Image (cartoon, rainbow, N blue to C red; front, side, top):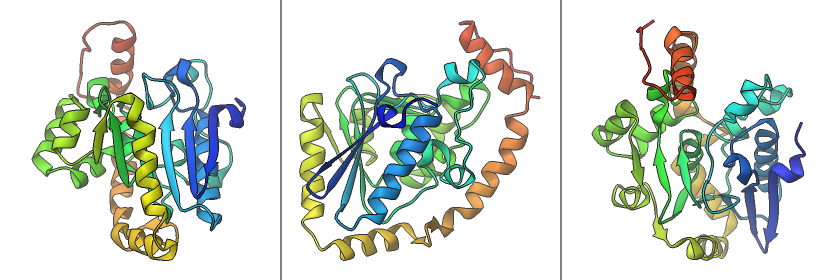
Amino acid sequence: MEDLQQAVLVERQANILIVTINRPDARNAVNAAVHTGLGKALELAECDPAIRVVVLTGAGEKAFCAGTDLKATARGESNWPDDPEQKRWGWAGFVRHPISKPIIAAVNGFALGGGTELALACDLLIAADHAEFGLPEVKRGIFAAAGGAFRLAQQLPQKIAMEFLLTGDSFSAQRALEMGFANRVVPLAELMPTAMAIAHKIAANAPLSVQASKRIAKGIADGKIASEGDFWAANKREGAGVMASADAREGPRAFAEKRLPNWQGR
């Protein structure tokens, strides 16, 4: 497995933990090393009372996260760790891994597919003005199975969310701000200073009060969000059919061959 310390960088600044997906040459795509590194970073944040806020970002200026590392998949590598407990954290070690500490996404570039799903799993979102979001999975014969299919409809007005889910179209950082998906949109040079300023403001508050407020708002109990249970069950049920379909094989093949897919509906 790729070196965990290289795939995910973890830095402490006072009471803030900065977590960086560090695979810029792969557009910060998620492989097994990233999954484990992100999951362990969240565990560290949750267990260390000195850490009050987490800031998640990507290395470089182009991509926050490009989703799953499809090149690793093509090489026959698993993008999931072997450890069963780490698998329970969900995709990227993150999407089914709620913690009490607030998480701010500092989106430094495009965040399509899994990148948007990481953003959906965070509590606040600061975006660089060139960032781009979207769930294009339906264009590839699959669906946003890392929480995107239900979280987007929870965090945006439903009809707007349905348009993006069903068309697979992307949306800009400015549009994200207008829809309430982003808290701030700033030039790239101001991204981390803005995220850190908000993190420091949160960290200055009573930590137990902040953590209780997040757990209540999110419905977190015993490390789970109970209200999401039925959605994850539906995810698994629907995924069994969709992911095994001919269309799920055709979509990535057509994308790789740079042609329009020939959908069969089976």
